Image (cartoon, rainbow, N blue to C red):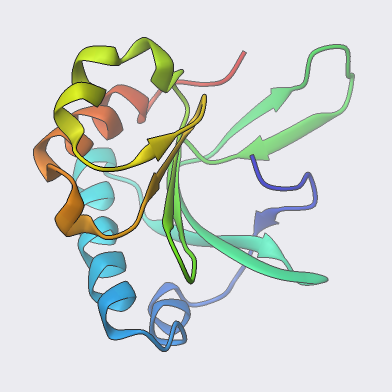
Amino acid sequence: MAGLATKETGRSVQNFIESLGNNSKQADSNVILKLMGEVTGYEPKVWGNEKVPDFLIGFGKYKYRRKGSKEEFEWFNVGFAPRKSKITVYLTIDINEEIELLGKLGKCKWGKGCLYINKLSDINLDILKQLIEKSKSAKWH
């Protein structure tokens, strides 16, 4: 997950995507934006930290506590961050438990809750949709 100072902002999602300056990243971002919106039914929100201009687009919101902490944090159920080299997709499932789907997804890397995709043409969007579906109402425990 991004830093703990990452919170929902009032920034415009479309302005954020247009500010990327890379036509293929903008196009891929718009596809993911539409896909996540359709699957989750949530409105997209820009999340970030004004001190460290590192922004993400998230769908849904829930509260959680980190293990051993009494402090409560907010995070989104699914989201993505278009970066210069990759698009990071954030899911609230343990992706390592989705071996069958990962085998069909295509060319990408992953961590426990993130997919790292170079470009959408490298992956199967139907499989990505299934992973988003599994994650839309899940919460980290």
